[in-house]
Length: 283
Image 1 (cartoon, one colour):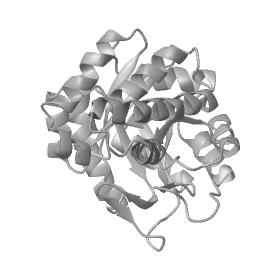
Image 2 (spheres, rainbow, N blue to C red):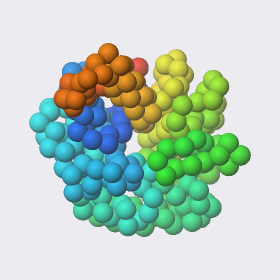
Image 3 (cartoon, rainbow, N blue to C red):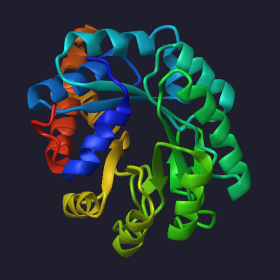
Image 4 (cartoon, helix red, strand yellow):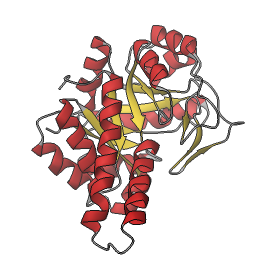
């Protein structure tokens, strides 16, 4: 069933678990995400980035997700991931997204607030919640490129001021997380997260969670993270499964046979994440 993300994340915040937010680019990834959610009776956000919309078309990809969401009996939100502009958010609202993010985290504090306020006004007018980001998360994902030098942690006091000033519904925080696979061992700043949680009332979001050890993910959930983004590990599972199948079946040209193992591999990744997020049976 297609729903807003707000009720999903408020319930997660109240009961101490996290909802998985999984990126899709096509039909096969969407199948993998929603089959995993259905099998585990778990709520999910299916995320679509600006890059995915450019690749698959705003006329098609949201429609695919919405159609499949209506065919399952677990709650599903369609979420714009890292919306790069006000115009991109408006396009997604018109396309039926039930959750959006305006990522203006590279801008100075006041400009970030101003950008989010515009999106909040437009989105709330049609009942859609808004995610924002404060602090710069390192790494590369789609159009988002932040060097190690540029990356900065979210300040707890600034986080409280930002939420109050912007009116955002969820806040993505930088606590040592990074987009893409990590160079070295991830080390999340749990003390910082606890301080942010103490000062901020809205649900908190962890981006760049691919590759973070399960133990750290569990600790982040216990410290107040209620939405966790996964993209890179799904892509890796897809590519690895396709390569392995074609290595064993080099003459195969049937895309259905080539992609079936990839869907299974991606579904396994999503199911594992749902389990460690604590969202099994929460639908």
